[in-house]
Length: 116
Length: 114
Image 1 (tube, one colour):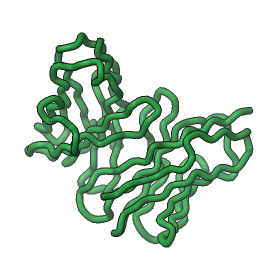
Image 2: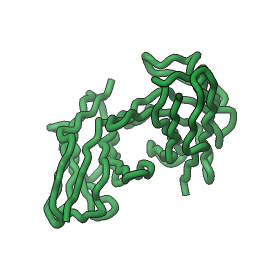
Image 3: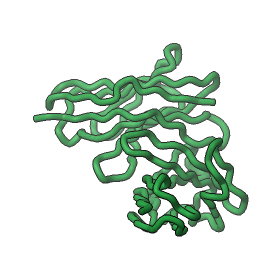
């Protein structure tokens, strides 16, 4: 149990376009989802925390107008990278916390975004 | 705010060698501690976790970690590594109470050679 999926796994887009990444908890309800960004050979940097039905809380330095997060249901959160630029190219990973399983976070497989 | 430091950026070991990866955190309160592994091309997997109780925690694949509160450390160990242990290892921490996200260290790349 506690499987998190992401779609797409890989996306290439042109500069200026927007890209939506989906994160789903497949067999549990996630009251909280997190979005991380991982640079090559670097650690995971927390971008934002989202609770179902409420606005996401963004970490310092993360542009909320650029990285739109929606957590409309207990099994789905989306990250939209708006007007993407090459510097947005990265590996984006979502994570979900299970309400009745303490503080454990389960991670999705990640989405590789390449902006040309 | 919490922070996590992992001392080793890249560790290279021969098969059957013993492994110890360092992890220190900074936070004044009670924490939960985790070690995750990321195999090449795969997503993060939980190796082990500490919430409370016995400070020596055993995880999957023969890994263990010891929480030493006085040293703010949670080092990962394995007595005998295998080639298949080649991966990136991340230490993470979050507050014991409350709905706070995991904060990760920068990771340690382990390369096991035959």
